[in-house]
Image (cartoon, rainbow, N blue to C red; front, top):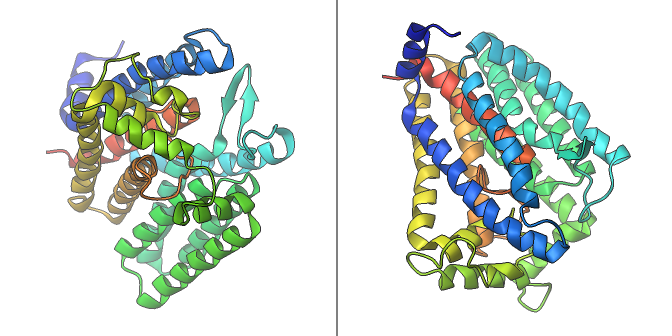
Length: 363
């Protein structure tokens, strides 16, 4: 039994806006997964709540991860994330050799009927490892910066094996912004930018589906615009208040309605007002985390909170812009709302890290 005074201290130190915003996103996500489960089951001849049952298995686990992570000290966070980072780098190689290909990619490891995507957990753990190395470089000006860059190249190389260019882009973007706010010279920023451009060119010319997605985005006569067209139709059909949970018609024709395009389902069934609330919740979590970051007292807190805020918000933004056909589709889930156990658990750990690191900075 936890003493009541410890619970009181924990409650007073936690950022309740971030905590309850996360809970609300999980709640909305559960209703949308319930609705998309009906659509998915009908298309694939499965039981009606097949996806929902799996989702409800990961939901309490995610809540536990959030709450438990908030109790971990900064020192233990560094140790846990460092060990987890190397473990998930190794596990991310396994699918290439031991997994079946799904939609042209090998990203998942199967455990007792459930699939785990190890690369999802590289997002929060790498941000912490990067923050540790950058903080060390600021103090000692040693090899830490070079090692940080080596880890970045290692992650991208592993993700290219799967291949997962959406995740590669997300991690590279977040790391680049983290390095930029750290305050490196323009020369180093130029080297990083050049590396990113060369990596993009390599992916475009040597991976056909990357070339296809980019070409089809810029040329209306190339490729299949089916999903993004239906997504935009779903947005326009929902109006202000939507048509109600379970009443989707246009979203029924979206193959990835339960994951990449779940925001289109939200627009059709819940309407523009609810979608605006969802967007506002992501912005609130992002801004509150940045607030804690900029008022933190040490470099590690500043870098880790900034990095976690950036990678979380970037994932949301990429999903939103892809759904609205403003950028090429990336296969990126919407944090806490899309169906996907690995995504939910990794985002839960990420928010738990934010709440834990920001605890002592809470007014």
